[in-house]
Image 1 (cartoon, rainbow, N blue to C red):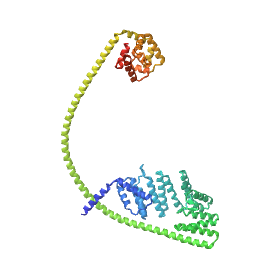
Image 2 (cartoon, rainbow, N blue to C red; image 1 turned 60 degrees about the vertical axis):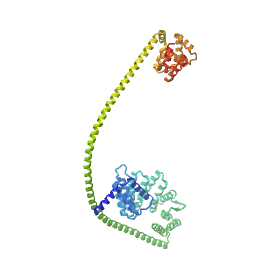
Image 3 (cartoon, rainbow, N blue to C red; image 1 turned 60 degrees about the horizontal axis):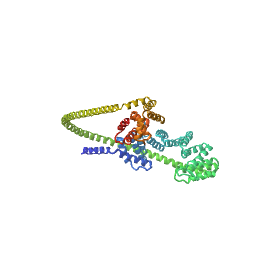
Image 4 (tube, helix red, strand yellow; image 1 turned 30 degrees about the vertical axis):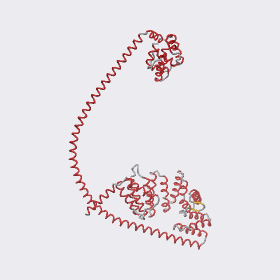
Amino acid sequence: MRIIRYFIAFVIVAIVSCGDHEQMLRMLEQAEQQNRDYVPFTTDSLALALTDYFDSHGTPNERMRAHYILGCAYRDLGEAPRALECYNDAVECADTTAKDCDFKTLSRVYGQMSYLYHIEQMPEMEMQATNHSVTHAWNAKDTLAALFYESTKYGVYYQQKLYEEILCLTEKLRNAYLSVGNKEEAARTVAVAILVNLERDSLKKAKEYMDIYETESGWYNNGAISKGKEFYYYEKGLYYIKIAKNDSAEFFLRKLLADNSDTNNKKAAFEGLHLLYKKSGQRDSTIKYLELYSEWNDSSYYKNESERLQNIQAMYDYNRHKMIAEKKSAEASRAKLTLSLFAISVVFLLLLVAYVHKRIRAKRNQEWARLNTDYQYQIQKYSLLQADVSNREREFMHTIKHKDEELQKIRDDIAKYQEDKARPENWRLSSRITHSRIYNVMCNLAAANMEATSKEWDELSEVMKAEDADFINKLKNVSPELSLRDFRICCLVRLRFIPSQMYVLLNISPQALTNARVRMLKKVFNKEGGAKEFDLLIRHL
C-alpha cells in the first residue's frame, strides 16, 4: 500500500514538473516585482516552489533569480542565515562566462549579502560582497547601480576609521555622478565627508561640502532636512561649535534631540550638547549631557548585543532544523529510490510489449509497402510512356507548323521579288539615290542609333525631288495634306529602309511608326490593311 502511495506521488510530481514553463516564468517575474516594490514576503511557499521548479527546468539565469527571491523571502521573514545561504546558492547558479549572464541580478544578490554582513558587523565580508556588487553592476552596464553600491562602502570605511578612503571615495563618486548629469546624487555623496572633515578640523572643506549638500542635494529646504536625514543637524551643530557660534550650534542640536524616532540621533544630540557646554564652560550641563550620552550609548550597545545574540540563536535554530531536514531528506531519498525502481520495472515491461508489437506491425506494413511500391512503379511506368508519346506528337506537329511557316515566307519573298523585278525603274532609281552622299549619311545615322537633323532631312528631300520627281508628284497628287513626318516616312519606305532604321532616324517608337503607316494606307490609298501593304504600295507608286 505504501509503494502505491509513493507511485501516485511520483506521478503527481512528474505531471507538475511538466507544467507550463511560461507560467512559471510569469510567477517568478511577479515575485521579483513584489520585491522591487518593497512589499515584504510573508511566506516562503511560492519562492520554494519556484526554486524547486527552476532547479530542474531552468537556465542558469532563471535558477539564480529563483534562489535570489527565496533569499529575499527569508530576509523579510527575519531568517538572515537562511537568506545568506540562498544568496550563496544564487551566486553558484550564475554562469559568468556566458554572454547572456544576468549580471544585473547577480549584482543585486551580492548587494543583499553585503547588507546582511553589515547587520552582522562583518566588515571584511561586507567589503568583499560590495566589491562584487560593483563589478557585476559595471558588467551589466548599470552605471547608477554601480555608483550606489560604491557608496555603501562609506559604512565600512567609517567603522574602520579609514578617513582618507572616505574622502577619495567622495570625490570619485561626485565626479562620476556629475559626468552622467546627476547633480543631486553628486551632492548627496558628501554627507560622510562633511563629518570626516569636521572631526579632522578641516572646517573650510567641511563648509564647502555643507553648502553643496544644502543647495544641490534636494534634501535641505527652508532650514529643514528631509525626514530620515536628521543626523545632518549634528554635523551642522558640530560645525558651529568649532567656529564658536554656540547659539546656532545649540539650535540644531536641540532640533536633532527633538527627533524621537532614532536612538542614534538621540545619542549624537547628547554628544553634541556635551561638547557644546564643555567648550562654553557650563559644568552642570556638561555633566548632565555626558551622563545622558553614556546612558543612551550603553542602551544602544545592549540593543545591538541583543540583536547579535538573537542572530546567533537564529543560526543555531537554523542549523538544528537543517540537520532534521537532512535526515528527513535521506529517508525521502530512500523511498524515492524504491519508487523509482518500481517505476523503471513497469516502464521496462511496457517498453518490451510495445517493442514486440511494433516488430510484428512493422513486418506486416513492410509487406504491404512492397506490394504498393510495385503497383505504383507499374502505374508510373505507363504514365511515362504515355507522356513520351504525347511529347513526340506535339514535337511533330510543331515541326510541321514551323516548316509550313518557312515555306509560306519563301513564297512571299519570291512573289515580292517577282513583283519588284517587273518594275526595274524602281531599282534604277534606288541605285542612283544610293550613290548620293545623303543616303550614306542616313544609313550611318541609323546604324549608330542617331536621329536625323532637319538639315539632313531637307537634303534628302532635295535628292528625292531631283532623282525621283515622279514619285514626289504622284504622292502629292494622291494626298496633298500629308504632314512633314508622314512625308519623311514615305521617303524612307520608298528608299527601302527597314522599320528598325526608320524609327531611329525619326526618333519615334516602333508602335508609333506602325500606326502611322497603317493610317496613311487609308489616307493615301483609301485601303484597309497593314503596314507592310502600305510599304508595298509606296514602293510601287
